[in-house]
Image (cartoon, rainbow, N blue to C red; front, side, top):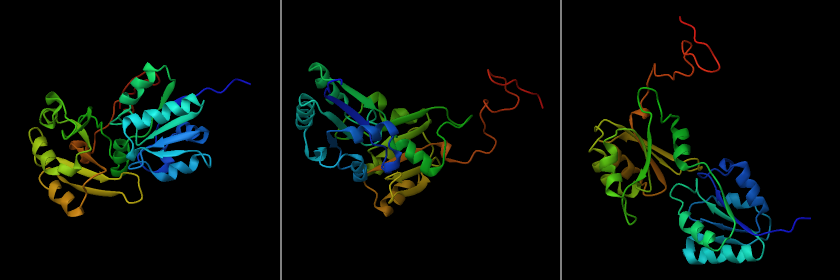
Amino acid sequence: MEAKTGQVIFVGAGPGDPELITLKGKKALEAADRVIYAGSLVNPELLQYCRTGIPLHDSAHLTLEDTLRLMIEGVEQKEIVVRLHTGDPSVYGAIQEQMEPLEKKNIPYTVIPGVSSVFAAAASVKKEFTVPEVSQTVILTRLAGRTPVPERESLVELAKHRASMAIFLSVQDMGRVVQELLAGYSPETPVAVIYRASWEDEQQVYGTLATIEERVKQEGIKKQAQILVGDFLNFHEGSRSKLYDPEFTHEYRTGQKS
């Protein structure tokens, strides 16, 4: 039998609904010897996939150094250590600062992607970010706060593209979000704010850049929300892809003129 070796597995937990974790992520939880999870964001129902009795550490109360110590301790004991992040860990997951020290210590690790809240939000409002002849670009970003944003990536600059946009970690300052977006988008641009997308207590708030601030305030939404902005949120009758156009020829089908 092959000797067991320790490793760290970063797992994307998905946006909230416990059924939206990937099969591979679920298998990692089932095999884990210890789990370090983002307790302030990860649905605790996901921990039911873990074996009974293994250590479960809520990282909401830990520093980076504490988290790394737990990881290294587990690997030295030849454990499978799962670091469970909300959504997809590559988007605002703060995993780079965890992976680099592991690399320096030659500790093996892998990353299992997850369903981001941005895609759960799009699914909830039943919209496509990339509508032909409307928008073919999606910008994922955030408002500058305690964590700064490069000036070239400010909402003021990004709004000039008028692309489909999903804004993370910013609903607590909705007034400033609107003010900066108006540098590029018109006041009539549709906006959807999705609180806790895919959770049982999900809320959807709709408006335009002219009205959304007041509507979000009325609903009392101050965190855990995706802000979706752009004309993709409007209904666009007649907009269709070339791929399924009967007159369009591609590798698998010859187009037929009507």
